Image (cartoon, rainbow, N blue to C red; front, side, top):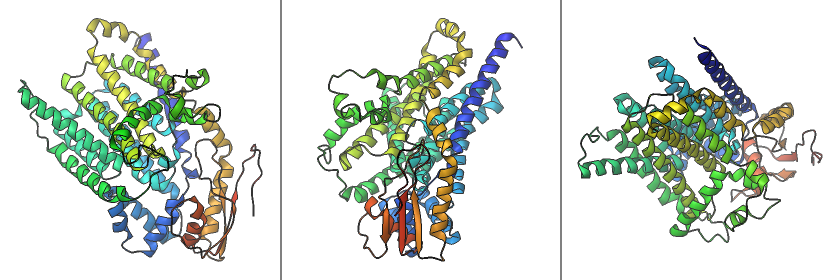
Amino acid sequence: MNTRSRITGVIRLIACLSLTLVLLGYAGLIPLGRWQLDEFSELYKMRSTPLYFFERLSWSPRPISELLYGAYGWAVNHFHQPLIVPFLALLWLILLFATLYTPAQRFFEQRDRAWPIFLISLTLLVLAVSGGDATEVFYWPAGAVAYIPTLAVTLLLFLQVVDGRLATKKGRILASVCLVIAATCTEAGATFVFSYGLVQLFQRCREAWQKKTGADRRPVLWISIPLSIAAVVLVAVRMNRFRSNEVVADQLAAGHPVKSIVASFKEMAFEIYGRGILARTYHQFPNPHTWLHSGMHLPLEILAGSHLWMEVLLLVSVLLMWTGVQRPEKRTIQQILELCTALMATALFIIAAANLHFGVTCCERHELLRESWWNMILVGLAIAGASWLSDAHRQRITRLTPIAPLVLLLSVLSLGIIGPLRRTYQAYAILREATLQNSESGFHYGSDRMSLSILPSEGIITEEAIQAGVYHSGVAINRFDLDVYPYYVLRFFGKQTIVIYHLVVPGDAAAPEKN
């Protein structure tokens, strides 16, 4: 082994260990997972209404995620424990398996090509858990049960396509399974499957029309079945969900398809730039939805904290890494671009649907999915770009391939994730103890009174802004918002009185509110 190979191996190891440590840091926050309004309402209805599963399914046609959530609700009501940690851990393991499956396949077939796909897959996973508001996807059971599987199967499908697995029957079967799961877990997943299916069918029709020599004549059954399922899901959503009146006041895009589509392009710009960056600077600058399109220059401090640096570094690192890999087949590059097109179209459709239905772009869960898909698009474009380079350019770029893992690591660290992780772990003991006390107070049936501490939005995990005070049962519940949160909690636990106060960790300016 020469010196260059040793240095390359050391750099790969450093990047791999660093990314793994970051991932473990986020996984270590699973014990801080918490319930929100959905759990107290839905789990109570599961206990009191035998056929409530079918009622949920009619409103939200997501069979796989609803079955998982129903099983979770049964276990909670049977064992009288929140079971948040084991449930979230199981979903995280599913995501980890989806991330590592393709690199493991490549490792046993062609070990020298396993490192690039492994580092890319690990980076995409770390970017997913660290790149946005992770609470509602990774630390909230009601959200995680739908969105972690959706993220897992879309990531697995992307890695299979990148690795050229659609050329095999086994790869197409696995891709079809991924698409079926995506279509039956979330409306966002169904939208992706529908978009991807249309792209695939369009490509087949184009090839048949042009009668291209060597056109892909493989069966399309693997995409036709998921496409049909996705269409049924989306029609059911349109017939049920969109009949409800959930429009936010004074939003002109609501109910207007053209205005909603136009708004989707603007919103994609916000998300590519980093909506979280804009939100954190809202108190210093005008509404980003206004000034970003008003011709004003971007303040330098916002630019320094945007996602653009991560995206550029991600592109560069994948380009450097993939030039050291054997040039993919032309058909594989075409499949990558087809998938990227579908992911981009899905992101636009989801934003347009939200604006059509609500009048605003919603929500954190969809935003995190879109950001993860955008990262996949960047990786796909970089791989396609590397394949289009001439042999002379590839040979020159290959000299820089050893540093690609470090550039990949820098792309993750450029998001400034270390600070929020550190702050969360500084308050970890207090937050964990408060979480356990909330559970013990609720599930202790020797008293008709309980207390509930609303945990602060400290570091990574955010919390709903529930009003502190003393609340008593007997209040009629005819709506679903934060004002009735205490009464849903009382009904779930069967208590008469609840005392809600805000927990403040050391270092905060305010003192805990107790009543």
